[in-house]
View: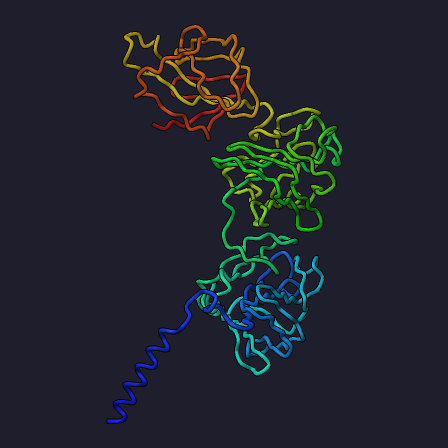
Length: 470
């Protein structure tokens, strides 16, 4: 009887205790120091593992932690006893294998552990214990993790379970030597929402000295303009500058960065970076990072191994939609500009041979239903894919019946494709939309000076066949 009453009384007391618990966020926060393993550079690519591996700890508690006597290891071979190192609440502690920031990939460590710990890419773990050998944290990436190459493994949130691979991500922040990571600062897992593409690089002008004529071009493929103020441009060594004045790259448009604002061979750049960047002729890099140092774009050329290696001409990305880390997607510019070097700063790239015209036949109406006379309703359309206007005066149209027509005057602006003529009539722009059910598109990738069915387009001795799509 007494036991039953006692049990009942005890149950009531427990319920009361539960109801009195403070569930506010401040009350639920970790009391005291709470040190977690927050970021790991396991497999650097720009420097050797023996130099570039590093570990970041974070104090997610509300009191400073002193790590004297704490240990890091893997319970197999690695064992490191830490000295007296303080981590304040909300602060980071970076430990690295090497002290030199240039040699270790861009880390400024507070403690160097040398070969005491080696982070293997597979079947490895890191365990943090306090001086009483109590396990305070553990990360085991043997299963359920994807270890990135050239980027750190970053914990998405210090409060999450860091022994679950789903709570980790691949770093996106640019480091000094070219790998990605955020040692000593907030982890970032999401790529930038404002993509920019490096589309042209003049690293070796001929008619203007390198110290005056170097430039590079940035393209915005998005639908909104991008303000690059506060962005960082760097390489993997010593060159770096921050954009300190407004540079707004328009949607579907370009901005040009040059070493000099004037006396640069005739260029009008959107930004002059001075001595902050030197574009090496052999092997070098261009890296753009946003205001949070999240890498936006990166190009590394290789002294002609896979990338073009021109003198007196820029390297141009054939199309902004292509992967600009692949050398085969670049070409040598062929359009002369300003002082005489070749390039297309601030406009679309053009990589064709010097004698190749950028005009393509892009649409043909060869069988209209109205009006009754087809000759008055037939038309075709050409497009200028090049970076400069093309004067077609003197060009010849040849029909299937071998009748010819010489165009007396017609300038096609760059990017324009609404230029239409009637066939077998005087050179006159055809405005009527008419019946386009039988209009056919020309495969633009397979032709510049073209042949389509019985129609031929000539300029000089150059002629090329086109495929037809319906």
